[in-house]
Every structure is written in structure tokens, then in C-alpha cells.
Image (cartoon, rainbow, N blue to C red; front, side, top):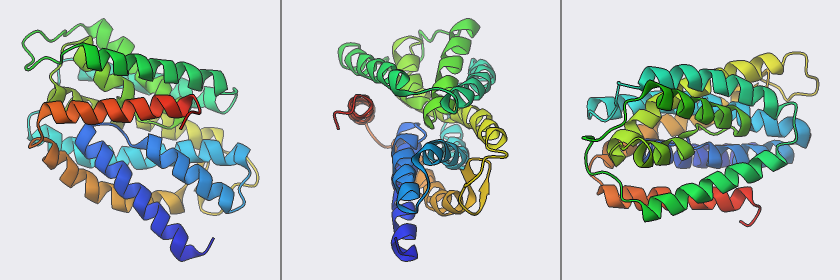
Length: 268
């Protein structure tokens, strides 16, 4: 693949990932990981190396992108601080475990389980009405801790931010409003991505045949190009979210989660 096409595809992936991150509070890894995986393979990287590299580099991009998006959500008053520390702390722990599992296990079965969780979330989001406000919000520290841990494992395991499960859980189980769930998810993903990034860097030390400009499993070249586009788009998408009807945001979330679930089953 020529360098111009390579850069254009990376920039396009960064724009899509940044839009999803800013508008819906998800990390965008579901787009970034497969794009990078295919590009790495096209550039001659062994698939067994390309997969963890795609996950690791996606998390690095997600980390930078979510800082930008979260700042905008925070300014708009959509980051709930009550259970945030529990989401973040246990998110980091879960992401470290998830990154370790991804480099030591066949993730086929786990992808199927993740797909089942996604489709369950879709059904729940369709059937259950999201709260209009945060009056009945569940502020339980244990509930936030469990949710953060699960999101962290998914983050490290599959190179996603974890928001794809976190947002439905926050709205359905913990009674967050849609906008507050999106903002709080964005903040939590900053933590879950950190744990995964550091783990992938450590696990990639001493691995041979990694492409140039790699630190562990993180490829710096792809990271810089994708992050450049992603951060710019995420900022504007986060501001856009406060002007979008929550029902429309929910519809976008349902479509995205359904797509991810079907993709995990190998249907799309």
C-alpha cells in the first residue's frame, strides 16, 4: 500500500472514531481496531502481532480523544462525579487484566460473550425507557465498582473504551440520564484506556518482528495520525451532543451497539 492511501485511511478512521467518542461517549475502538488490524496486515505484519497492536494503538488514540471529549462534556455539566472514582479505579484494574488475557488467550469465545452482552443491551435499551433526569440515580459505590471493572476488562481485551457496555448500564441499571451517562462514560474511558495502554507496552517488550516506530504493541506512527484527526473531531462532536435530542442519541447508541454485537458474531 502506498503511503498516501495509508495516511488517508488512518485519517478517515480517526475522524469516525472521534465523532463516535464525542457524540456518544464511546471510545471508537470498534472502528479503530479493525481498521488498524487490516492496515497492519496489508503492510506485512503477522496477524498474531497485528491484532494486539490494533487493540493497543486504538486504546492510545482513545485515551487522547476522550480527554478532549470529556473536557467538553464536563463544561456542559454532563460528568457525574459521585461514582466516578470507583468507575475509574476498577476500570484500570479490569483493563490490565483484559490486556493480559488478550495476549494469552483465544478471544473467540469471549467475543461471542461480548456479542451476547451487546444484543442484551440493545433489547434493554429498546424496551426500557431512559430516565429524563437524574432524580433516581443509583449512587452505590459497589455498583459503580463492578461496572468499572467489567468495562475495564472489555477495554483491555478487545481494544474498545468500554463505553459500549457502560452507557446502557448507567442508564438502565443506575438510572443516569442519557447525556450524563455519555459524559461520565467519557471520563471513565480515560482511566480504562490508561491501564490497557501500559499493559500492552509492557507485554510487548522483547516481542520480535514488530513494525518500525513501535513501543511494545503500540505503533506510534498510526497513533499520531489517527489521534490528530480524532481529537479535532471529538471536540466538535461533544459540543454537538448537547444540542441533539436524547431520543436521537439513544437511537444512535442502539444502532452502534447492535452493529458491534452482530460483528462479534461474525454476521456483519
